[in-house]
Length: 114
Length: 112
Image (cartoon, rainbow over all chains, first blue to last red; front, top):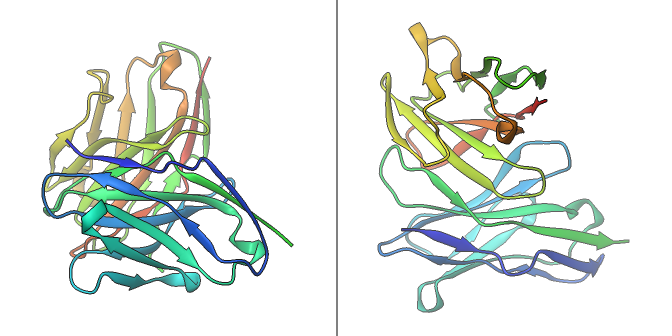
């Protein structure tokens, strides 16, 4: 079985601060990990992924994430945060294979105040 | 970037009726998915589809659900008959050879 936990339902910070959204996972083998962002009324937009190799991956919109196998985490980071980053962020895991499904966390709603 | 289209954006139907949700995936993609999102909750996997066949389905993919992609046209999710608990936003996704799924804008289904 595979699962993803995003422990923070809401995160609020001020523009210019550093943001870090937490994600941990449970999976018996090597996971593929993803971050997606969802703006109100819109679909999911891909931010970044970790498949293998460098444990720090950079994505779109200035985001990066660090894969830490030791504590099964894949936290999303950005500095500085901008008010336009306000959205809901989903961490997801894929178990590999060409047709593998995504298992999502419950999401973290980020509010960046200007 | 690549776009997945979904038709319609909203659908309101009476319980017991049939509904078909349509997805136009990215043109060269071969793997197709449906996910269900109840308001404010996480996205949950329903089914994936490749080479004309269902590869995996979750427990949410009830017997009343079916998927197909006839002749490379729309990838469809059909629910017959619908139930109140089917009210949700349904997202289609497609994937090519890289491990990245592209999502459509969703169809909001309301079952009365």
